[in-house]
Image 1 (cartoon, rainbow, N blue to C red):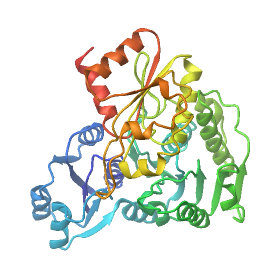
Image 2 (cartoon, rainbow, N blue to C red; image 1 turned 180 degrees about the horizontal axis):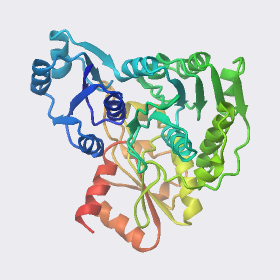
Image 3 (cartoon, one colour; image 1 turned 120 degrees about the vertical axis):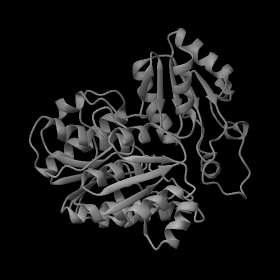
Image 4 (cartoon, rainbow, N blue to C red; image 1 turned 90 degrees about the horizontal axis):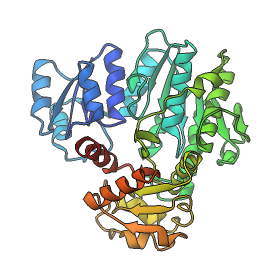
Amino acid sequence: MNIYFSGIGGVGIGPLAEIASDAGYQVQGSDVAEGLMTQQLEERGITVKIGQDGSFLQAVHNETPIDWFVYTAALPSDHPELTLAHQLGIKTAKRDELLAHIIAEKNLKLIAVAGTHGKTTTTGMLVWTLRQLGVPVSYVIGTTVSFGPSGKFDPASEYFVYECDEFDRNFLHFQPYLSLITSIDYDHPDTYPTEQSYFDAFKQFGEQSQQLIAWQSERGDLFAQHPDAWLLNTALNVKLPGAHNRANATLVLKSLEKLGIVGDGGIALEHFPGTDRRFEKLADNLYSDYGHHPAEIVATLQMARELSDHVVLVYQPHQNVRQHELKDQYTDQFELAEEVYWLPTYLSREDANLPILTPEELTQNITNHGSVHVADLNDELWNSIQKARDAGKLVLCMGAGSIDVWIREKLTTRR
C-alpha cells in the first residue's frame, strides 16, 4: 500500500508515518517547514518534501498510484494537496482511520492513553517501561523522545500503545482493549461547545473500552457503571519529581498489573528519561514544556518548585478561541512563580469573529499580578531569561506554539 502523509512533520502524523513504514507500507509526505519530526523521518529514509503546492503529490502518484492520502485535522478543506487528492480519486482519511486499520490488520490489542493532560508523558512512560521489562510493543507517542522513534511497529508485539487524543473526537474511532484516563478537564471548545459535550465524549470512550483505569477524582463518575474499571484514589510512591508524574506512573504500574505483566516497573520508571517538550531540560536552569492550560501550569510549576525555590515562568497562551474559554480561569495558578513573562497568544485554527484577547486582559485576575510582565519573543526577553538563569533561578518556558522553537534557536545562536 502506498500512503501519502500531508503534514508529516506534525506530532500526530509523523509517528504514524513511522508506524506505516515499519509495517511495510510505502511512505512519503510533505509539510510547510522542517522540524524535529521531519529530521527524524528523513534519518529513517522516509522522503519528506517541504512545500505543499501539490506538485510532489502529483509526481508521487504518477510514479506509483497513492492508495491513501492521510492528513492532519489542521488542513483546511481547500488545501492544494487535499483538493488534488480528491481530483485524483485517492482515498482520503484523517490519521486515526489509518491507525485503526493498521491495528486491526496486524491483530494488535490497543492500549489507549487518553485525558486532557498527561497523555504524552504517560504514553512515553508505558512504552519505556514495557521495553525495559523486555515486552515487545508497537506504539505512537505524540512527540519526539530520546529512547527511540516517536512511532514504531514491532511485528513481535501483542500490544499497541497509543496516545489517544480527544481533539476532533479522534479517540472515538477506537475500541481499546485497555484505556488509561489521565485527567478530564474541559478543553477544545472548537470541538466541544459545552463542558457536558466534552464529558459525554469521554463517557462514550470509556464505554468503547473493554477495560479501563482512571482516577476517581478525575470525573470517575463517568465510568462508575463500567463493567471492568479500576478507579484509583491514591498515587503510588514512585521516585519521580512532580505529583502529576507520580500519578501518571501509578496508571502505568496499574496497567501492568491489569495486563498480568511481571517485573519491577517501579524501578524502570525511576529511570524514565522523559519526553521532549514535557519539562524538557534544554540547558542549565532552562526548561521547555508544552503545557497551555491552567491545570497544566499548576502541575508543572509544582514540579519545578521541587527542583528550585526560585522559578521564573515564560508563558505563551495557545489559540485565541481557547483563551476566551480560559480567561476567567487564570487566577492563582501562577503563585509558585516569582516572576511571570506573559506573551501574546499564539494563533492557530482561529474564529475570525472573536476579538484577540490581549495579555493585559488575560492577566487581570491573576492573584500575583504584580509579578507579571507583558513580553514578546525578542532580545529583551532573552536578556531577562539569561539574567534569571545566571542568578541560579529555574526558567520554565511554557506553550504549544512558537516559544519552544524560539528558545532553541536562541540557545544555538547566543551561547
